[in-house]
Image (cartoon, rainbow, N blue to C red):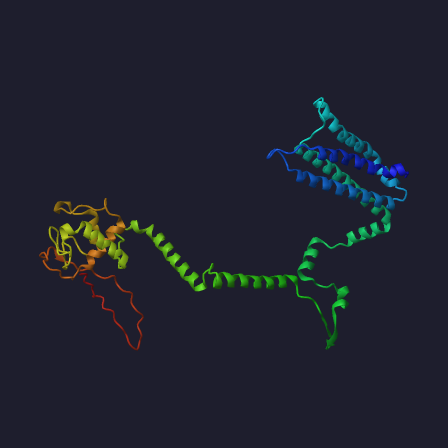
Length: 389
């Protein structure tokens, strides 16, 4: 390569940098908020100069690898015309800008200079990538076929994906290489290998340590997570709420055929509230009776027991002034007030109304017979009855 050919890349790159430097000198001050600051343009100019230096260094390396430089010259011959056209375009840019406004010298704004520098950096970057590609091909060519054959043989011997994953998880040593991890002692013909712990086991062990630290900080220091006892209590409370919500779906399916006496305090308190709101006017504050019958004695006009009381509340006795409450009270509310009325039995309040109706006796459900022991036979009294007061 002649001296002129050697300096040709330098001349091309200098042609790219010259108009940029001239434009940077003559750039008009930027109006506040109208474009990038001049410091940004100086930074882009510095990056362009750095790329020029790298390109020149790579050119020198390729000349040394290629001997007389014929390989580099052949690859760049096609690109010289394009590079020359780009240089001419950059040189013609200021002239066109001056011709656009006759009688004025060339003056560019910082925004225009910014885009000129961006374009120049992109072009230099493309040239740099092309040089690296050529340099890579030259190195491959100079390395010879022996390395290519070794690379092909290595690719042919590469293990499968599953084998690679298994080896990374276990770090097991091949039988052919067990001598490398063989320990220098044996017992009864048994030789020990100094294998490393499997990585999967180590990762699991490290994970438990990390989780232990996280648990300690969050539970015992920061209090973000509850203790196990607190979490159990919270879960039990939530379970009770869920059960109550589930049972509430069926509370209004109660009728006179399946109603039972409610004994829990919440239901009885609800029944008392309903009684004081709707029943006191006729039956008295303590169930002693008034316009309606006495609720505290053992006499009932329409039958005692939870089912009869529930039925009387639900359908009423219109001929005696007792209205039907099924349009005003829910089935669960009628069950609550009926259960509360049964708790008034035997309370013996003052000013009781005289007994009305008949004494109510309700037979208890027959109990299951217990297994009879031969030594101590037990006979169930089938005539036992329960009197509901």
